Length: 294
Image (cartoon, rainbow, N blue to C red; front, side, top):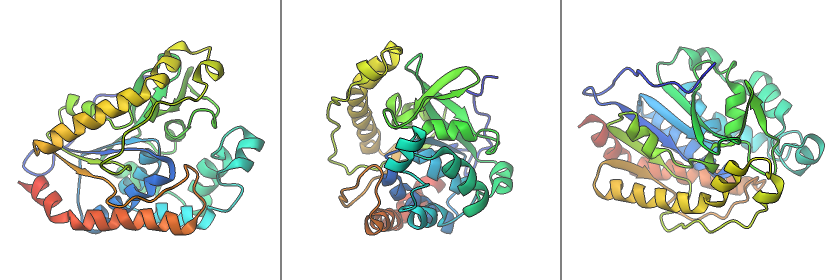
């Protein structure tokens, strides 16, 4: 079944459709978690969310209305070898342990509120990269239990994750093909867009020297996309700055630089990047509300 659906979203606020675009970035995504918690605490509502990688995995908590959940379980299980890291990579082939992260955690240890998620009228799209075509796909996650594998695919980083096969298609991290899907949100007709990035304003992506051609030689289109990802990313940053300078979108990005590993275990750093997200969102709350309600 084709799950790449076009939206028919219910409009909020003066009939202007509002989208929230969430960048990935592994554990830097806790910045986004901080932003979203402030959104929920202040009843900031959007029509649709586009989540990429960690942006999707943490962004679902907005739709399930679970303030603090993303920070809570990441702090609690950061040093649990069942969660994510080298032990999981060696024993399962995935840096994120599939059984722990997408089964035990979401159903037992710190359950996602599936009922609230599924009953919400907020549209949620997870971005994945189709390994065979090298292109981004935007999958509507309307039933969180049924669609959990798409969320896993969105956050499955190359080299440290096995390909995620769903309905005959093979997927990896959505950030490879579309790391910040502002253009997709514009294409789908959203008139007001809030972008949450996880890199500071002066960040420029460098060319990757990872051996994509060797590891993914069976998938030449994916290799081509991955090799050009740094060019695509920097072009997207320019596009975002243009729209931001024209006051067409609101952009939140870390105001402080906190050096983090992709699979960060330092609890102080995890808390710190979350706290920056909370601070930055609170500092921009008046501007966000004015933008939404005007």
